[in-house]
Image (cartoon, rainbow, N blue to C red; front, top):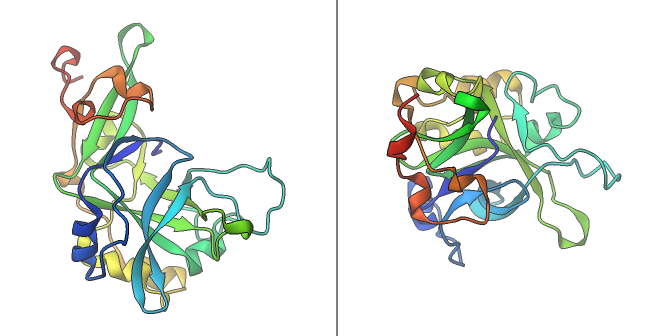
Length: 224
């Protein structure tokens, strides 16, 4: 799964790589982003891709129950057929700018050791957002798509976010692609060999902590 991530590269850099206008407002870096947070996402606009904000947690706009689940992840294997996500997969795919993510693995004595994972460069998670947003001006919800873990990530957790290869970022957002087979033929994840990971401080366990030190290797943790 993906339950915490970080972004410290300026959004203007992601905008440049996508070939779009930079955001109007500066969204500061955050080294500890938990579910429920408002995060920048790239979506398909009327005149091409654009950056906007979404809330991390997804509930379809036709679900009126405020107590209904708001999953933060969607499984790549079922996102196209899921009652919750199928429409969003067809009509409202998005990209989540990031630099890395965190996973926890049980260690000696049951202590959960956090690890930072990345691909050695700024990245984009494949995601879906609520088509059309929510009534009342609330931010649309979004969910990050996950897949079976690959490469070094398999040491830590059985699943990982889908990190798209930069060559297909714009294809993922293309509204003309709305059939599952065409979408999956047009995009691919980064190679598993690019994945890197290292143990980090347990300070990341608390979302209140947010500083560059969170992504630094914790030498006391070893390499597992």
